[in-house]
Length: 343
Image 1: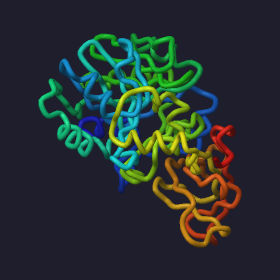
Image 2 (image 1 turned 90 degrees about the vertical axis):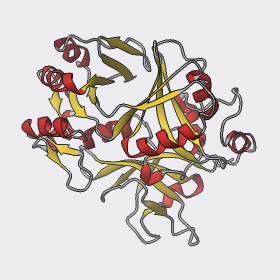
Image 3 (image 1 turned 180 degrees about the horizontal axis):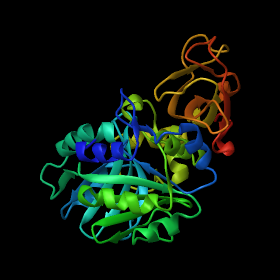
């Protein structure tokens, strides 16, 4: 995190995690969680980062690397995407937005350096530039009154989900029906935050992660890199996986998995009395040989305990345990019940 941005957040009574540097809360973690279901809230999205792709070949380059149809993006439209190994395992997940000057990628902050370096390896003679934007500050705004909060900062949101509006140096991307991401330069970030905070309650990053769980929005991070094929995260359900485009790394395996009906692990919401950390393995007493799942995202829940997204082998979802076969039992609910039966 940029030190100037951290200093500003500290001045607004933000409390930081000593291990990750993320904002935990603004003095009332429990109250902030409850506010997320009733009020408009504002979160510093320090777990995300921005990577810009420009040049004449940027669209075709990203299209040939990612799992979704990038060349079909209209100006100011965005879509989810995955980036796989040759074995079809996800290296990273993205929101890709097409703009006037190129493409903007949002991804996990702890995968930014890796993704930029590895993508550069495939540029070769293509006319593509890849530029990390460490001084872009990302703010998350959620709630029924987000338009009023944006107006206080002289901003407005696009009407359609996964579209963006560029307003001077500031961009507003609509993530879902009641959430937007505001992307602004560091120089304007403090002023924008204060204007938005006049209409929205500041909350820590755990609140935003809980909203990700509620909206079934998975994010590949360092803890889960190469753990999943795209279908395990239900990327096809959110427009992040196309079976009608050309080749990309891992495409043959991803397609074969789909058409031969071998997708036996799917995305579930899980509830737990214990903390859920991304990358934690899940087990079942009915399968003594190996783990049957893995946590993707975890967050404290407003009603107590913890909520998360997890990839689980469908046939063991009813007996899943955290950390060991005799670990604490979790309640698992399929995000898309139509996928609940093994193929």
